[in-house]
Image (cartoon, rainbow, N blue to C red; front, side, top):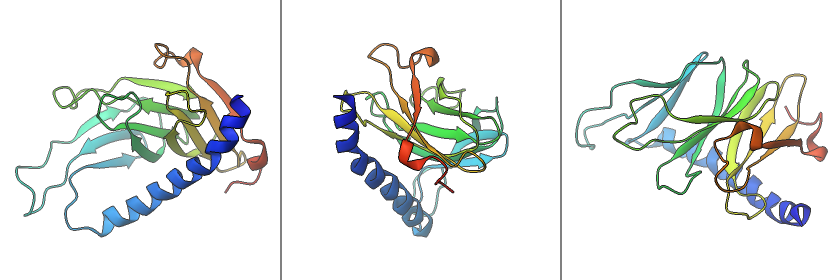
Length: 180
């Protein structure tokens, strides 16, 4: 059953991935940008950019995580249904893929709770998507370098989302050695 649902939702995953790229390009071209996530080789931090059209002062920079190296390919979606945008990213040099759960506006300046959903080499991109229609946001990562493979990081059952040992990582067979 999981295979059938996976195949059915594969096209939705690619559509979501392509849409995130298009939205990122469009966001760079707009004059008003209210929220951005910036990356440096050894940390992720959030900020908000304000323009003359935006009320209030910009947010103060705050680190979400600095425990690894090479955060790359950040994508945002509501992973846990609380209405806040969460983050999926691959740590390229750190060899892992993580989901960061947005703690909400009152605690957004603190470190965000996170779960390592898989350990893969050279993770370039990660996107949240419910591939098997079970209501839990899975993660798809794409790796470059010598790995050149896409991986599906299957989310566990309800109540175990934040437990790294409950996640299952599988390569997407058709992608092995074919990604750039």
